[in-house]
Length: 190
Image (cartoon, rainbow, N blue to C red; front, side, top):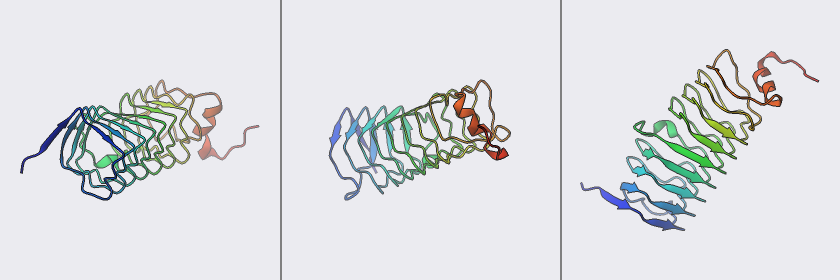
């Protein structure tokens, strides 16, 4: 079976949830205001693509290749990035709603999350070395056996993580955010 190779194409206002997404390799493509909710993106390769104002909630991404991908103003509820292909996995996020997402065991080194909602997102056993969380809501985000070396939480909020269960070294927190490191002690600060 031949695989389509699509390059430098703009996809605008297409509802892929109502039709099968064409299998292929997509390079340097832009997706604007498209609906991918519950769409099967299994074994599809995306390289240097941008998704703007798209809904990818609950899309199926088994063995999907995501290389140098930018998501801006997107809805990504319930995505399992953990099932994506690990080879050259590279993402950036800006103004995205990413609640209930899983990055379990993913290498996210140098990823930027800017102004995102990451409520109940699972970062367990992931490598978040040098990741930037800029103005992100991290209510009930999960960090367990996570590498947080040089990770920047300075402007983010509502995170809670156990320093004894994660690798912290040169990790940046605001003074107000340090309370998120003490949650397990059930102490009262006034």
